[in-house]
Image (tube, rainbow, N blue to C red; front, side):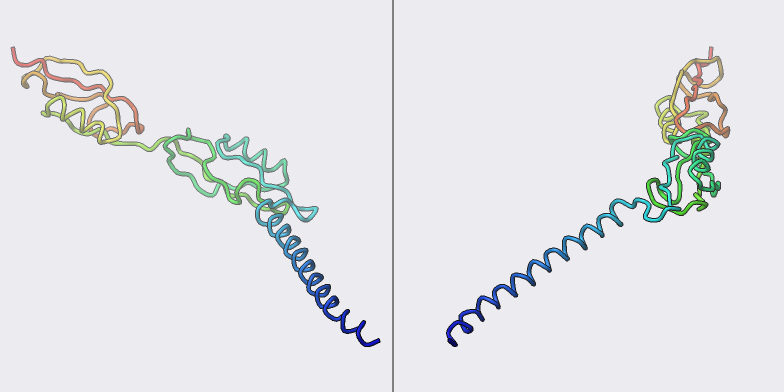
Length: 183
């Protein structure tokens, strides 16, 4: 009769190991699901939490209304020039869009002041090619090139429009006036 219990011992050990392995796999799956649910998809976990709406690229007054409609407070934290967003548009928000946050939380907004300003370079007395390179190096573009009467040799820059030292938005056009040459 002792032969039967000894034969069951290896079977019990195998079953015990399989049970531990299955429990470990199940625990790993549950832990992975929870990590993915909380970190990768931060949905509201509590009834008073809401997902922060995306207001980047929206006019600041509309962004404030949208945030307040969701139960958040909007605060203009900063303003800065932006190369692509027009003045008055939201360029950044904190917390980021889609993050779960409690109702009544403050969402800090950064608002665009428009395109950065550049100074028009002084190109008087330079050849046309060099004058154009100076304008482009300043972050501006050369628009119309015309000739005006003057005492400088033909093809030499006389002035610009806007004038040297004036500010212009990055990428805006500058008219270049070249001398016709002395009579």
